[in-house]
Image (tube, rainbow, N blue to C red):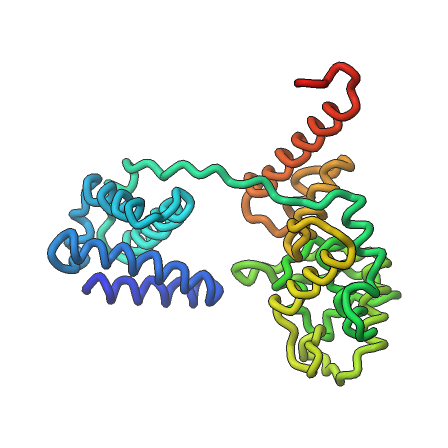
Amino acid sequence: MTADEARAAFLAWLAAERRASPATLRAYEGDLGRFFGFLAHHLGGLPDRAGLARLGLADLRAFLAHRATEGASNATRARELAAIRTFFRFLARTGGPDCPALKLIATPKVRRPSPRALTVAETERLVDEPDLLAEEPWIAARDAALVLLLYGCGLRSGEAVGLLRRDAPLPGKDRPLRVRGKGAKEREVPVLPVVRDAVARYLALCPHLLAPESPLFRGARGGPLNDRILRRAMQRARSALGLPERATPHSLRHSFATHLLAAGADLRIIQALLGHASLSTTQRYTTVDETRILEVWRAAHPRAKGA
């Protein structure tokens, strides 16, 4: 089996067994494509499966160095190395060769940026002024419902715009909202009454017929809503309310987690609400909270000047 055939089998496995999203598949395909392209030049030809097993530490370091000269950041190279490791784990599980050198090479160090959350005051201004989101009343109601879903439930923007009409959280229904997140993983999140009221108002004003299995949120012409339209709505809100540039749809999810943590919520519960596979991902919010503590301390303590 050639390297290209092995890569095709790996991508098919990701799609069928791991239920990877199209975006994830494209990312893996691109990362492995760059790796194989380098190997073809580095080795004088694309290796077969046996040739992949003979790759050494020097070959892997040469690839990372090559990508650095092309301007790839540490984060990009770390992601590419992770894709290569996953590919070789797949080969080992399916009777193919392993690559022992992957256990020896160090992953480029990546300092993950802290989530850029809004303050409580900034978030309240956004959710309390729904009429500033759009001139058309039903579109303003739609955008207000989406903002409250992102902030009130901690949804990703793709999760919110991907809801179906039958999933609509409405007043009088106490059941949690079932959300399909990354990797097709499902989770349940509680819904605040104010969020249910906002969704009900949107449905009352929406001029389009919404079948149970059709998308809940619609564009101006009745088609399914997409992330781009939601980002434009947030841009309008930033301009109208004088909010900072960090006020984006995803910042509302960050704000949801940060404000819960500041109020004393357990980190494991926040992890479950956000749908994070790893607690280490959720732990980034503790850094945000510690930063806020220092800001308050410097501003409030009479002896903190110059600290």
